[in-house]
Length: 153
Image 1 (cartoon, rainbow, N blue to C red):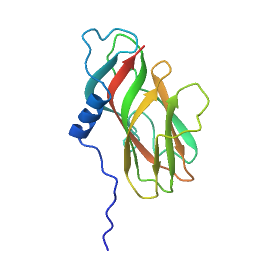
Image 2: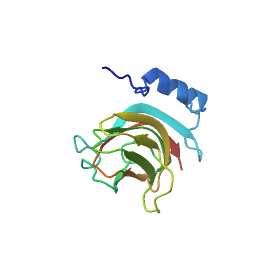
Image 3: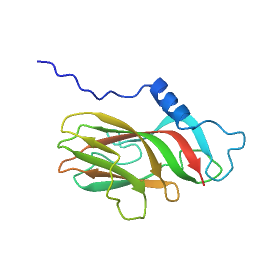
Image 4: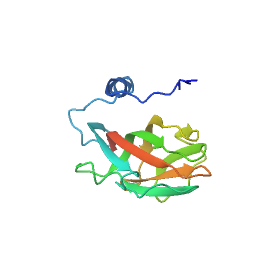
């Protein structure tokens, strides 16, 4: 029996529409504080390939990732619009993206079940251009993160 998942990976058109609806358009002067600067979607983390962070991410563990160095921006970003994806989860759980150097919040960016690939569009706050991607599950996971836009400091 084939079971269809209601979760689908967002397409570029879906992500572009989300950016438009959220008002994430290119500004004439992208240097202003809080300006959202869209970028060409760029894979910044893929733990399957040890890109940006080593993988797999063990249970109840976070990986600090430097999202600002890949931006090519003149200012350190204070936030990033990410397409976060959990793949190859060994157990059901959740993923949280939060600023590096601060206590882990009690909220999550996405929930997943064992064996499923689950993407989610998330706005992550950064600290000095870095964030922690935390695996809140009793098993290991692989994490993929694509950056779509930055919020400038």
